[in-house]
Length: 160
Image 1 (cartoon, one colour):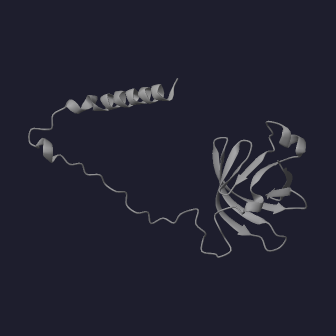
Image 2 (spheres, helix red, strand yellow; image 1 turned 45 degrees about the vertical axis):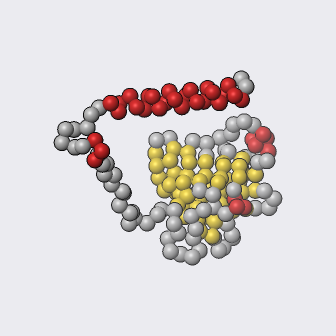
Image 3 (cartoon, one colour; image 1 turned 120 degrees about the vertical axis):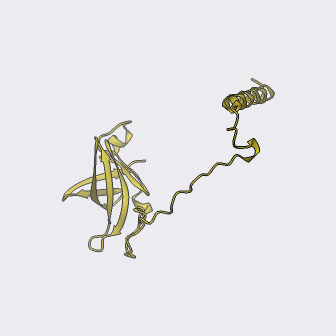
């Protein structure tokens, strides 16, 4: 298809869409309202007074995003990283942790003074359930990330 025929086809689609949108517009306005005096009132949503759950809770040591050194794809070992699928794979971006069958939406990130690392408070959804969990993420020697939940430590290596 040449560029001019693509443009012609696009114009035909736009014309068809305009005709389709105007199909229901043949209805007359009510008799008591002149056609040139029709108005629509659209209510604006009231501003929310609830705090944004992604905002820090007032403590200068907290944030709502995961720092760069923790971002990326992590897995059991190099061979698991090379596989197209792994139950141990963890993908971390600044706002969430994605596990095999669940996603943890970050609510708060707090640096850990003793031993380093960060605590990530998150709302976890998966397998039909939602709960709140705190993950401790700690970087080790090389590209090793240890994730601790309820005193269970799971080391992973960075993929790629």
